[in-house]
Length: 211
Image (tube, rainbow, N blue to C red; front, side, top):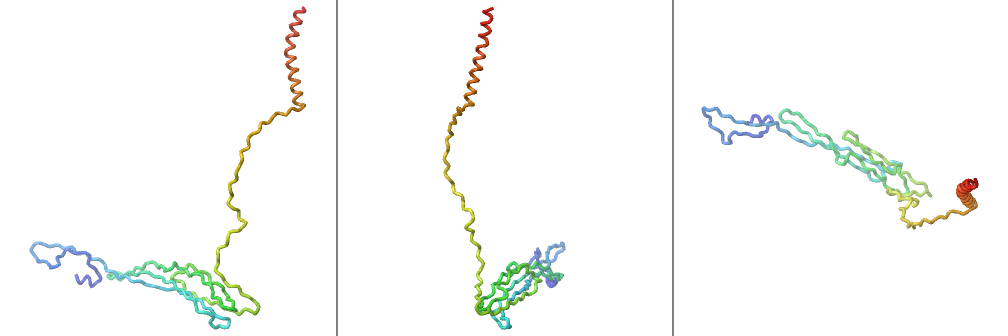
């Protein structure tokens, strides 16, 4: 057994008696299961961001800003074959450097008021180094302070929530027909028509009696 463990194998199970066995005439069978032993190690790699703050004459204006992203992966080595298996790299903060506001120095203005956020940083990204230069502000010029961005307020011109208005029911009014001259003429013609219809049979009857 030791000859196998020395080669990197590990014991899984065995039904061989711990106190040994006695040889007999009948064959004896034992099952010993082994597996390849492994060694797991963790590998780390860092990507750094450094921002220098200097005056235009090269002197230091403020302390450097430093940030680090740590990438890690596991390396599994087979103790029997020596083969290595690597896991994927993972970043401890999602692989991004946050935006950084430049320090405010009285009577000076920075060449960059803010270093923008940087995303997509991978284990193969080289270290990032930037320099912000401060220039003297001429006399009489006031430099406004750099304030954090705030969400804009809603405009006063935006429509307000509509409110319900009371609506009165209008009763239907009866509309009387007009009694103009045109309607009077129609009534007269109608009466004349009725008289003609009634008079016609009477005239025929009177004519027959006369004959």
